[in-house]
Image (tube, rainbow, N blue to C red; front, side):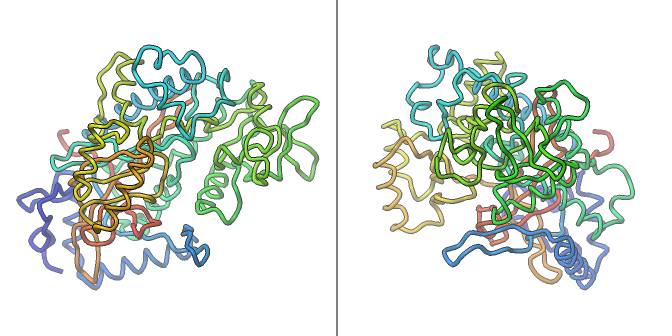
Length: 485
């Protein structure tokens, strides 16, 4: 294999491993020096070892298609992404600040709505939000926290600065893959973990357990915590099972639980009889949680669950209604929300965002569909988007109709010059691919941010779509302490 720095071209984007002069950035020096020492054959051998490990560990995800659900092995690139610990500490502080403000915002919406009265966000934005739940008005979860687990998507621009692309506060997924990516990399590149410059990530599940345990309505040493899954056909079922196993708690479906009408408490059916449940880490969307409160035909939820939660007899993480804050239209107001509740300037910036409900901004968006990224307010997984530079005139005409028909439901953003990282695309061949990062923030009694997060990478050349459901892959993420920093 030729020297990596001489064969690799970053194509003019900010590359996270190699600078504009072709030299390794400080946190990547050890990694790139090691990769330079490997032959193309050895590099390919490590790649095959990673694929075998993924098969052996059963790491998979589900893609929904018109032909049915397809289980696929987790797509993984063996070249890690490196971030300087000094840069990461700034991002970590910004993530804590953001989630603190968002939880204050959600709590306000379900109580006094002072943020609306003071003109920070228009009332109709909330009233028309698909994820505002009137059923949650007046509820006061422990510590005033509604979003206990948040996955915030970060990108880096051409200068290497972190920006928030979106917040995920309903049922964010991906953290199990962050943990498994590290396990795979330790098998494939074990020599690189012999020193302590790569910060560990293995405390996440214990931190998650502590976050959930702090929510227990009962003041007991060992509360009953369960992970509630829609079942084996859900695309994130691997993660549900993984987290339950790692925390040492039960993985349950709605049919395993019931609410006793005499005391309005939640019980789990066990071979030893009913067991009182204190905390439910639910991985089911709001509308399927309780057929008494939401969809009456839901077979995934538990009748009476909302009643038990409203009375404070069980904790739900994330709380129903938290998704009002990850509406992409609400996202545009988050910097003002931070200033309003915390009296602080945002540490992390938003990506510039155009609200299609505003006539002037809508006119700009419609005139520039070929250069913007258009997103619906409440979709996830990369679905329902228009990536202007990669779209056809027919695509643009369709989105113009959609925007005109329902302007409140769409936002637009500039096509970002997303950072890149070397990615193994063929035998011994490394090319730049665009990526993002999803750190996970936990909040209840205390706040915790993962050391890095899930790096998702667009495996197709030139693509900006990183979601695994849309053909993206993943890398291990290293937060590296560099000497003298």
